[in-house]
Length: 138
Image (cartoon, rainbow, N blue to C red; front, side, top):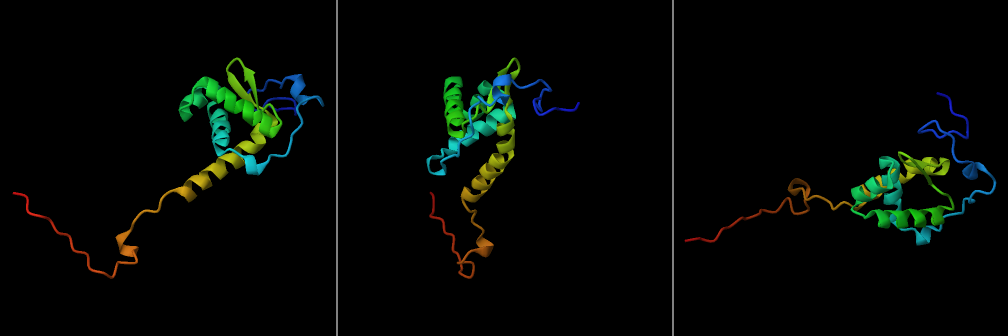
């Protein structure tokens, strides 16, 4: 099925006219200093799950908390980001453009912040002799 610019890439149904008109919320630059990374996790979960309720459940949030996070995301990005449809939430073109870079950034942050694992073979103290002792238990 071929999509025109007005068609949703997920369902083939057209986007609501208000999102395509010049009266739609204009995209504002995002203030990276005030960025809440938890909101990006919410955006990623909504894209993956296609539902605000399921996204909230996946993240351990109530539906009202997920809805509030979406409202903050909409304000932050100056875009609706998701449109309510009978089957859940459909991402807008802007949400689709930013979804993969956000997912990749979250992945990189997650691996960067993981604690390092101790490997005795490569430890600075690997040349030292380690003694393991046990007290008598009687």
